[in-house]
Image 1: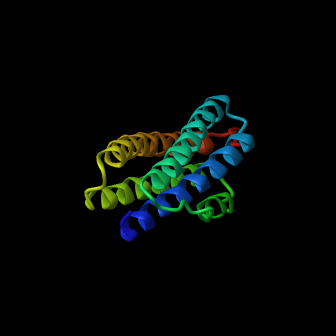
Image 2: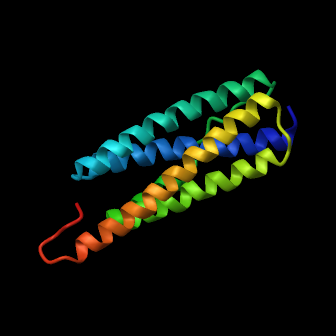
Length: 148
């Protein structure tokens, strides 16, 4: 496996692990059942993406990183759920951009196919998170409403 491709795939792998930690923690913190259900679904996707990335790296002769990115810690330091979800959206956009960098390297077809699907999922999650952050911001501006 090309070292640049391996490094970028490992960066994505570390980000997916951080995403899993973050989504799991956020799902446990929120009392909003709709948000919680979506976060659980997204967590399942992150776990699956992690396993597939590890397998693809190994299949093509690379060594999967065992590290986890620090994104979860950054998001969880924020005090409001709206702010956390807003930063989550930015993280989803970051992953989609990184995937485009990997695709520019013309990876093997199986890696490219997976990454295209992964980028689309992250773009979808990014849009959901943006909309949810707006909804939470509006809800917390209403008298008597709390976001957690």
